[in-house]
Length: 540
Figure 1 (cartoon, rainbow, N blue to C red):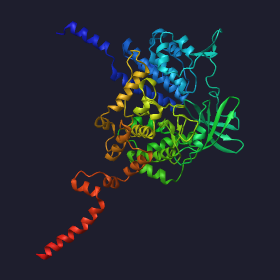
Figure 2 (figure 1 turned 180 degrees about the vertical axis):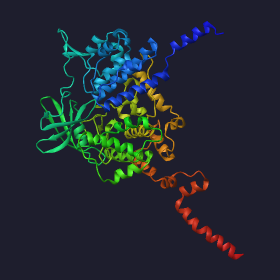
Figure 3 (figure 1 turned 30 degrees about the vertical axis):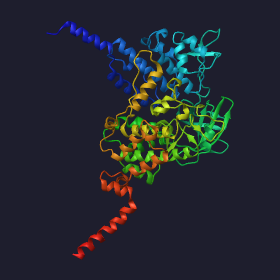
Figure 4 (figure 1 turned 90 degrees about the horizontal axis):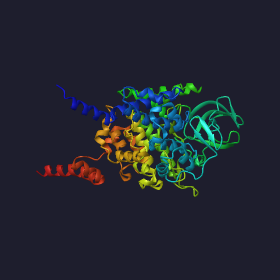
């Protein structure tokens, strides 16, 4: 017979402890739904569709985590970005704004700054008086003093001493559509969008050619950085112009129509059952080519190789070529600092091209400091780059060097190969711990990683060489990783030749280690020993 007191205690314990496994599964499902909606150009999924069968407390906790993810994606991809007040109107279970936890509010402020929009101290104090002190501390001096002439709240913009009216557009170029003419360009088809810009396939009228037109309000040195980089695995920039109406920076580049590696990740996420293959990659590229009216290559040795190769081989070649382009950028003093699948374009031949140098650091420019445009995507950051994201963690953008880009390539290739990122970055409990706690947990996960357990994520049949290369990329200490992107590129190329890889590995026997350490002496002895033995037996 069950003890009712024991049963009550068990239920109380369940209510007190959030179901983190359920949370993780539903957050993954929400992220997958987001990716699917982005590919289909549909509205983002609603939060409440993922809250079924949870009690009120757990539902609110999960809603907070989903809201943070939704905020990040909307602003990063420029897909109907919203403010905290909009979420409270749509999802009342999040609670009144006075009791809202700090890290959820900070997610909006951080996303806005990443999109190139200012955050003002007075705005923070007016909107969130109860959390203002903590928020301003988290912002670490990045909030501007004073306040704007207008403050955005959900679907309305409130001007000082004026009643609410319909919200004005956050970015003047966000309403542009195919058929519009902007300066010297006729917009044809949208190619993508992100935190800083929208990209269209466009016809440059004066030159009668097709270009990829990046329309941005962001001011930075990306055009100058890209202009000095001429490499087959880095997107080539032609020039830049300034639009007066609407006010925007226009950067026009070569057309790379095969989509991005993010398209491949989204499509392959449910195919990691041993069936992911080069054919999946080619199908995703061909769908993108068809969508923008670009012909699919009829004959291509590159595509033929991919169609026949295994998925680890395909991932290795993509990584080797990408690392080759990255090594070229590093040799010119340019650190990318935001390597992720969405920033790798694919050509019709399935060749990767590194793009989006918005937060790069150009060490060759005397007027540029590592702190000037520091940023990136947390999920792909090395431990030292995560530490540099917040002043209270003691890191510095100056500590983020070439090995941090190598780390990000490792995370991205792991995601391509395994169907998920190597670190399931912990979601925060609803304790108001803020983004600082999130960063600390992400850093701990990367510094205390168990690589034997991590390797279990990789698909069956993944070669040991590939596992070793990716493991070296993800080492917590900078000195234990590949010290250059060129070294990583050569290692990945070697993975495509298993016999060469085995020959170059350190032998486990004393004789093998002696041969690798003293190759010339070993060759001499190999020639002398048979002659000595022959002479010895002849004397007998």
